Length: 223
Length: 270
Figure 1 (spheres, rainbow over the protein chains, first blue to last red):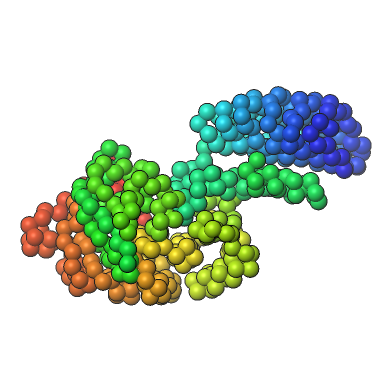
Figure 2: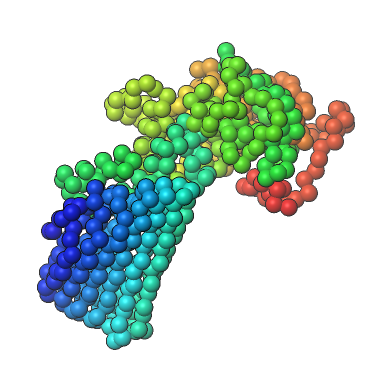
């Protein structure tokens, strides 16, 4: 397993050999890296990536996964926030360059204050790569009036015998949900925080030990 | 004993006036039944008292124990001692029931409860309400049946210990057993000295919880108040006598409202 925190997250090119598994865990608390990360996955290889991001800065983080060998798999789970006046972009792409490959991308974000959070990325199944499956799930909750969230997951499919799905949701917290919680005496800030817990918490499943505790403290402590 | 004093309350929803001068007292330690035809403002009164942002108070005053309620935020009203059990409680994805209850209970205390205290209180409340304790680990109201949601409302009432509880059709969608559990829990809370303002269409609930007073809401005002016998009268005669005996014409709804929808909301859609 490779784990990088804050400034340790740098430009990186990694190859996952045939039948191997690469587990990549990124976490940002103080510093948002504008790194470009390229992962190449060979036959039957598995890339398992996660990024928990509570950093205050902006910039563009880029992850590209190339599924080069038959049966190669990739999963990616991002959960994070943008706040202050940060302009943050998370760009995640997967290229299916072999048959029976699969990529599963899920990104969850909360945008606060005057910040802007953008999820972009293209999942591309190239011609002839039969039996491949790709999915992109992106969801942003807009916390404050001045904040902006944008999701644009793109699918490029050049083959018929494949499965592909993408979803993008940008929305604010539900007024009815907030009213329900407030009517029980819970203050607005706490109510908002509780409503986002369930939204960010699933990323914890990818982390262990001290790092997991640190991420949980961030999520529960209101970032 | 504190009194929730409502004086000449006017409330609009989306620019349309629904309450047109409600005056009513609800006493701590007493139960007031609020009855009236559909769409005449019963639920609107409860939501306005709790401070739902869609319900705009245009005139009048509300005090609890002499303290102004209308200037308070929703959470402050709760802390002051108001509680609203909703007809359709929200399903809140991602919010764990136990986390939610702990947060709601702790805001009323200076020091947060110990985990042991919290769990023992929670466990006994779940037991009394006949809700399996495992459900405390589920998301709030998510995937709960209609009856489970209503039990869960009363469970919160038990844990939050309000001075005045507002119950909006708490008996709708309950089967016979659940109605017994819910009404039994209300009776327990009555004994503890809580005040209740209870909206229901059915004499059966009122038979079970024996209200002290009855208020009849017609055309956005309290048309008449009286003792528990009023419930029986309405149950057997409907609301026609309001017109013949009191000379108050009952505004008829001009929309068909099916069971399971809020009559006021439906009327506003027109």
